[in-house]
Amino acid sequence: MRTRRPEPHTLAGAYALDALTGADRTRFERHLARCEQCAREIASLREATARLGAAAAAEPPAGLTERALAAAARTRQLPPVTRDPARRWPGRHAAAAGAAGRAVRPLRRAWMPRLALAVAVAAVVLAGFLGLAARSAQHQLQQDQSRSHGIAAVLTARDAHMLTAPVRTGGTATVVMSGREHALVFAAAGLRALPSSRCYELWLMGPAGDEPAAMVPTPRQGMTGPVLASGLRAGDRLGLTVEPAGGSRRPTSPVILQLAL
Amino acid sequence: MRLDDSPRSGRPGRAAGNTRGTELSALLGRAARGDGDAFEAVCRHIAPPVFGMVRSVVRDLSQSEEVAQEVLVEVWQSASRFDRSRGSAMAWVMTIAHRRAVDRVRSEHRLAERELRAASFAVAYDDVVEEAEASLDRERVRRCLRSLTELQREAITLAYYGGHTHRQVAELLGVAIGTVSTRMRDGLIRLRDCMGVGRED
Image 1 (spheres, rainbow over the protein chains, first blue to last red):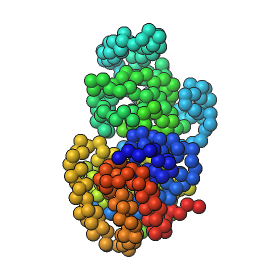
Image 2 (image 1 turned 45 degrees about the vertical axis):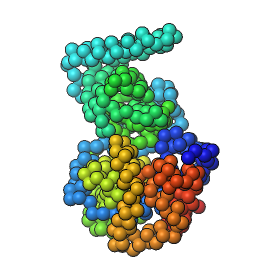
Image 3 (image 1 turned 60 degrees about the vertical axis):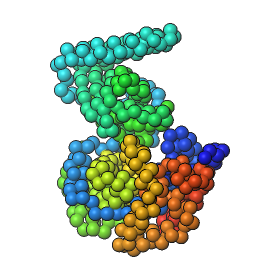
């Protein structure tokens, strides 16, 4: 049932119904980003789909609202999106210099005294990483080595600090961070496999907004990473979302992992 | 994060009973600033439509409850991202909810089972309409759905309540993808105008 590619505009209904996936969705969203009229049309169609949804309203199970309130009380709210033309991916480092206005919270938090643990993680992670590096082409090697150096710097930092948390859609994430190095290393086990049109993306979510931190490579044998994210600032949280392959400038889907750093 | 009893939050009780339109968006605005009472009022208002819609897509009761709870928490978490110039608060909430519901069914390894369910979808849709008889709003939705052509109505309900992609809908209805796409759009425009909501200006 393949026809020639339709006018993007005709997909507005399917998009408003969340019936586009993968490349269809990516393509339409690219069109949407440039088409103010489409954005208005989608918004108006969503008023209609919302009525379809509301028509199915039903008494929620007892305690649903209470449980949601309790969960909300443990959940930090996202800051509003601010329009700041100075902050552009990948200009995070440049922007860091002008971050005077940011609320600065000291990087505190139980710095782990368990250097041994960090070193063990470092050994495992580096072994995997070097194995990968050995297979990569010569020109890639240098780049990998500098990344490897960055990873080693975080893992061996005196203030290296490890956090582990479950990912909402499955799997466990481990983060070793260093305030001194302004960087963190992310690794995960058992992340849910994604279709090739989607990928995991890491975000640094700070008081001034969300910024892309790194793309997460496809898991190998259930293990993901290590991924180095630098440019960490006080008050940042680490977020993980699922994005169209190639990544997004801002999170476009719910956060499935959020760690206060 | 604070979910405190801030002095400006007032009592949510009455508002929760008949919160509509602008009131809901005002409550969301307060929730975005960390007002727990306002968020509670938001929840009371949106929990039935969110839960009911999610259940009509996900079907499984405990999973529906889980998804509905995630939706409420996401509403709290991203309340600051709601932009009233872009549409109504209810449309914003239901968009979040529907996305989560379809994400859930698409991530489940239950494709075969869902295909079967789709085959008997006529029944499921009738259930929804049956339950929908309770209120005038629902009556209007039902009437507006009836005003569509059969293909428009089937394409829209398979996608919205069935959680199917436009390609799956085309397959189920045995028509070209391009045809399904235009029927979805034309049908939604007709529904929108029939319901008297969200006209583009």
